[in-house]
Image 1 (spheres, rainbow, N blue to C red):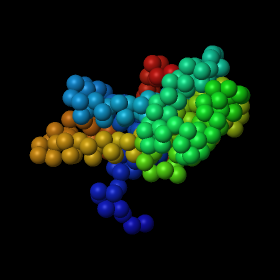
Image 2: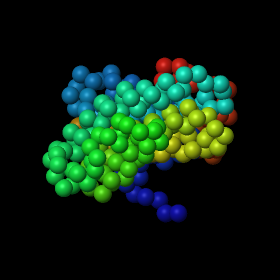
Image 3: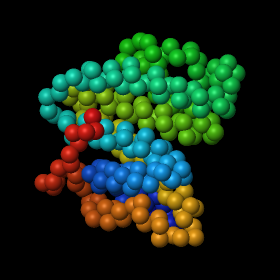
Image 4: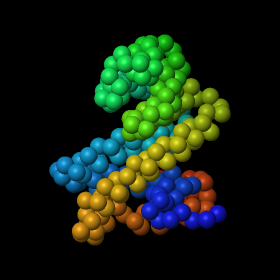
Length: 241
């Protein structure tokens, strides 16, 4: 397989393939480094975009590590996602979509075919399916690329909470798929953050190194898809649920 040219290749996605433990460490470390510089308005924009998708990855990662144990309160967790968090996120999505397609315009009606009802009423599956449908629909419009990523990220969060709540055999593989999908989404955002940092510090490029621990990307082999489970060291995820 031919190698991609460096500007095209996403080093974060490539070097975390097959290791969710490594991805978790890279994402957590970068979040902390960006947060430390959040007083800078440019960095604050990067932090807010990256932290939103990284937090979802951390949540799904935590849920996947707990698979196979006895769970308590998972229905309450799903209710928190769909009842408390979804209405807030929905307002954000509406604002960004209606910035490009005003409310009740033909395109806006096509995207929000029944306003908020599909997201706020019905069964768990109905509401999660509505989020998925919105994510797929917004893929049709290039100007909605940013909000589409946010919608897909939230879908991953809601679906993972549902899978954990169900606790059925066969759900482990689906949870793993969601985690992998979210890893790629986070790496895409991180690739964009790197580009913004490169532009910001184009005259003082060594400053870019402050925001990443490159040793985390180099320190583990990608030879095993489950290498995060093959070491004795465990990650404390108690504050991520």
